[in-house]
Every structure is written in structure tokens, then in C-alpha cells.
Image (cartoon, rainbow, N blue to C red):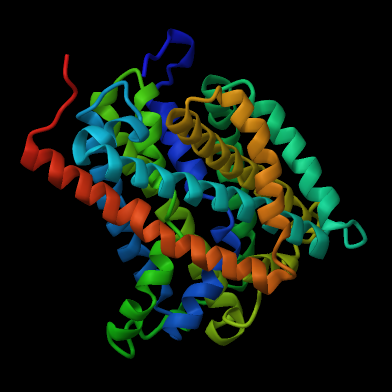
Length: 365
């Protein structure tokens, strides 16, 4: 893949793209998913362990990509495992990101209908979202990276600030005793927790555009580390204030927590509206990255101009996103995506690095 100067991104932009891809819906649902499986206040331990596992896998993604500078996952996988298996890997990758994009656009519509515009059909919200996203996608990778570079610091700090407003009801004694039932509950919740970190495998695609590929490992570590910090703070506060039993029964425990925030003399009262607004920006970035990767993969596999693929996928993603009949159906779609991520973020990178190392495969001059 020949990368022109206008398509290049900096190593800091790669970090931002990585973090933006991971930070999406999970900030609202992670406390519920983990408390359901673990059943104790030790949720934060599971989140940290899963985070370190994700860091290790992200480093593997960076390592295998460094062997093939200027090439995306869709190109170098065939050099490593052969054309047939490489094409199969690429198709799984594309399907995964198409489903991810459909899931994000559907869930943002569900949240908007429940908390902001209860009389607005989700079809209207989804179509509006897709039109705005389509406009940005036609600008290709560089405008996307520059927009993410601007949005991530603002949204990250804003989300952190709004969540920290809830510490007025925080009581550290509610998190004790630590490991009261041992490590078994922590391990029971490890899988569902790890799925919340899925998305870092995008490094294997965006590595082709990076101007300094030798620094990708550090970028991968920082990108996931930022998520570990935010997820841990979020879950600790939610579990402490609401309790494990209540968190496990709420659809959006983080939003329910923020609805109860009261600050005397503060110029805002409905903090959940602020939080949702900032969160929608992050959902938008996750969607954009997912759509772009799926389009790039299809473009490479079938040799179709990427802009045509962008437009075509808008229709496909809408159909998939609107298909679930209700919120429960949408959540099941999310569970399917999580299971596929075990392959795209775990099996594939490890296998590619192992085979490339054994066969001593690197980018040929």
C-alpha cells in the first residue's frame, strides 16, 4: 500500500485513534457487566488484570505490524499465513467492524431515546448520525485522525470530571474487605471485563499510516493504559455508591449514578445530559473508526474505491443496526461482537506474530 504524505498520521494520532476506538459504550455498561459476573466489590481488580492482558495483546499487534511498515493488516496477513487464510482473516475483520459500527449507531439511538428524545423514532436518530459520519468518512484518514486528536482530550477530561462529581457519596469502606471470597469471582468476571477493551487491534490497520512505526509499541501501551485508568475510576465509583446488587440490575448504571449528582450553587443540574452529550462524541469516534476500517478492508479485498464502499456500508450498517427488535436484541448483538473480538484481538495477532517469527517474515525491500 503506497502511503502519500497527506495520508500519514503521527504516533500521537495513532494513540488517540486507539484510545478512541476502545472508549465507547463500555463506559456506561461495564459496571453492570462486571458486577453481574463477579458479585463482589472486587470489580476493579478484574478491570486492572484485564487491562494488563489487553496491553500485552496491543503490544503484540504493534510488534507484528512493525514487521511490515506501510502495509495494513489486510495486506501483510497474506504474506504471513498465505492468501486463502489471509483473505479469511480479512473477511472476519471486516465483518467484526461492520457489526461494531452497527452496534454503536443502534445503542446511541437507544440512549438518546431513553434519556433525551423519548418521542423521536430511533430510525431518525440513526439516519442523522450516519449522514454526519458519512461526510467525515469521505475525507479519509488524516481529517479523521486530526478530529480525534482534538476531541479525545476534551471528552476524556469531561467524562472524568462528571464522574468525579459523584465522590461526595463515596465511602471506601464499601469496597472492603478486598478479595473477601478469594480470586475466583475476579477470574469469573475476567472475560466480560476483557471484552470491554476490544478495539485496540485497530493498530494493525492504522500502523500503515504512521510516520514513525518504531514507536508503535509505546503508543499501544499508552492508548490502553488511558482506558484502564478511566474504566477503573468509573467502576470503583459506581460500585461503591450504588452497590454491587443495584449496579448488576441497571441497564446504564453510570448514567443512573450521574442522575443523582447534586452540586449546590452549580450552574448545571442535569449532569446526565452533559455526560450523554460528551459520551455521544466518543460513540461517534468509535463508529467512524469502525466504519473506516471495514471500508478499507473491503476496498483492499475487492479492489473497489474506498469512497464507494463508505457509501454502501452506510446502508448495510443501518439495516444491521435496525434489525434487533428491542434493547435486549441489541445487547445480544454486543455479546456476539465481544465473542468475535476474542478472535480479532487475541487469536489473530498472536498467531500472526508466531508464524511471522517462525518463518522470519518481514517486509521485503
